[in-house]
Image 1 (cartoon, rainbow, N blue to C red):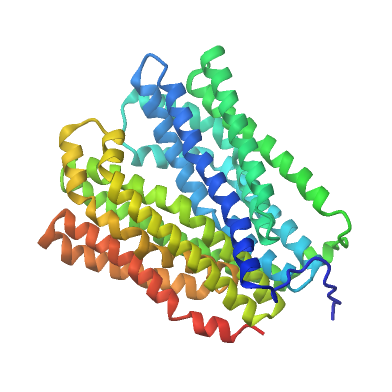
Image 2 (image 1 turned 120 degrees about the vertical axis):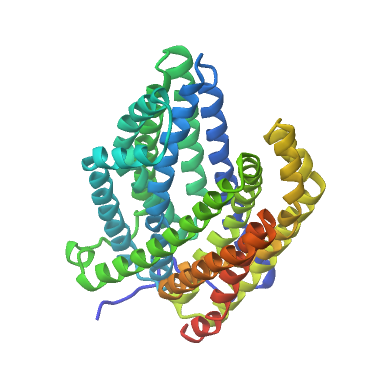
Length: 448
């Protein structure tokens, strides 16, 4: 049996004040790094918006959407790596901590190369599903054909970010995100506004930024490896551990597909209610996205902390991690309620200038007042189950929630119209939280 030596494993017998500090040391950098995502999108929009024809903007929006769905589907590379790393680190098993990084990077490289090899059929299917003008499609394909070469780097960055979060280090992920997105913005400005490379310039900026970000991430990894025991090739290719990683990633992938389907289904049903309702719901979904940027920080913090506690077999540490993260997540959620209530109309007016859309969005805005308090448990418990790699329960709860949600839409939509659609979406968040919550005692009993 391989010897385990605790070198940098976390301590869990600490005061309540220290627990609060630990949660915030993880959550705050994640929230800040999340904020760089919409900032980059805004700069992309502003830069492309300087070009003379509107189809340039549409092309980037359509092509970028394709990558969003592809990379969202492969989000298990970040989530699975964090949970597995946190447990190995919590157990003081440095060899397995390094092996997880190596395995995850190999999987990321294989998937990234597969995307490049299959870029033509992927692009053909994606653009056939997204109806657009000839100009938008032509420029979108040009953007896609360049940016697709960043796939191995983009997926590799997921792994590096997840690995450092599993080590309870959120500062390096923040530094990497700031560097990557900051470089992307600078290159956008140079390639498009100075060199006049149009959509090709935006795509190339992303490719260069992704590989530069991965290179910096590798440097951080090499620095972190100092003093850690080397891992053997035999341990990296341990069949049992590879099977476990594939099982975890498979379950997270299915869970993510269900979640993507739910929001896609919401948009599809919105479209059936007319252009005004579709636009109003799209505006209000920005509130949901904004909410996720804030609450994800505590979900990631919980993921790292409970994973470390699970790896160390420290049941009380698990309990304290969940409780402390829940306290702060609910406080922040209450803050979102206040912001939405006081500033909701103002936010809507910033997001759209169309009077009919403003009026419709204001009509359905009250559904967002309760969303933070209702949704917080779904976000938080996702982190708990990812950290403990109880992905079977996570997958099953999401499948059940999806089936229930579709049934609720079919019942509520004909009766209440768009209010029924928002009622069903609210119910989805409740069911996600409850269906995961019933498993928590079982998870806790399995620790230690």
